[in-house]
Amino acid sequence: MKPIYLDCNATTPLDPRVIEAMLPYLKEHFGNPSSGHVFGQETKKAVEKAREQVAALLNCQPDEIIFTSGGSESNNFVLKSVAYSLRETGKHIITSSIEHPAIINPCCFLEKLGYKVTYLPVDQYGLIDPREVENAITEETILVSIMHANNEIGTLEPTTEISQITKKRGILFHTDAAQSVGKIPTRVDELGVDFLSIAGHKLYAPKGVGALYIRKGIHIEPFIHGAGHEFGKRAGTENVASIVGLGIACEIAYREMKEYMPKIVRLRNLLHEGILSITGDIVLNGHPEKRLPNTLNISFLHRSGAEILSQLPGVAGSTGAACHDHTVKLSATLEAIGADTERGRGAIRFSLGRFTAEEEIKSVLAMLNLSIGRANFGQY
Image 1 (cartoon, rainbow, N blue to C red):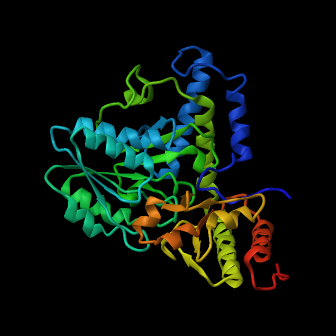
Image 2: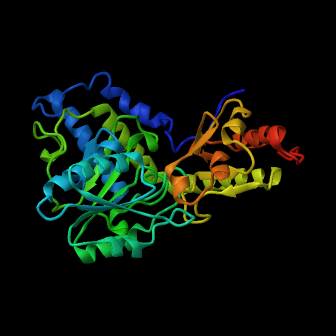
Image 3: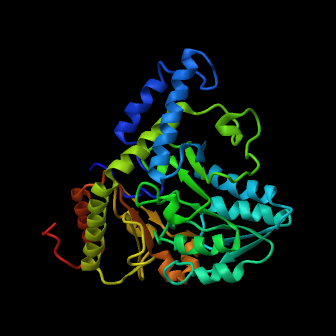
């Protein structure tokens, strides 16, 4: 049987149109964009077109977009460069307890350098209370970094409300939008952010490329020093083919998001309702409404998520806990929302994508019914 991929929050396949757009820049258009001759100018135009395509998706100006190697670099860029640039102003950063390691680990590094980091709690759905942000702000606070959407449970954070607080207090606000860009609207004017991170491989572009939105007028130290690439903010010869791929991926999302997202929501709900009809012993992890349209994270109670996935041959998903030597290590997100060991052990994240087919969802449900079910799934 053909494998079924339901792990799009981990990475997405390349859209064929992205590959097609990239090919000329892997073959004949090989020039360095910093070169003044015709070979360089051809690739320079391609990079600037991609910058416009990313900016259109975020509703910002092209010169507010910096290309990076991915979401991790973009996150590190903001945290470390803001910390260095504003070190005379203060040394306090606010983030959440459910951030991606690309936020948590740089924060831990900064703590070793004498910075103070406040890790805010979340409620049972994974939501930050904006009042907690306001209460955590001190005279030393220089940056608030709260993800737009959680990568495990899909919960959407109240970034607009938080931005109103940071603006009032004159504090910079960053959001890691790696999981949300291309899935839901991410207009920076509506989110109210000063920085926004993008990872190409989460929206059908290649791995190893990303982008960072930096609001015009903000001046922070470059993360990578060298020549004057990317408006002098990020040195290094541009990864032209991958940048072209990211640009066309953003253009596709801008043009087609309203069309393909309702389909993904319908398939996600079909999967959820189908599992409920097989077994009632499941719990939804994350907010039932304020979540990514493609993400279904559920815990099979009294069962092991890893064992269930092993009984679904060829189906790709993710578990929420690691089991070693008869002990269970919950993910930081599940722990933060109050999941106990049993609930964490049974957690599985299914994350659908643009190319997920209804027949694939029905196949997964049929396999689940054979392995753990009690219902007749002839209807599927």
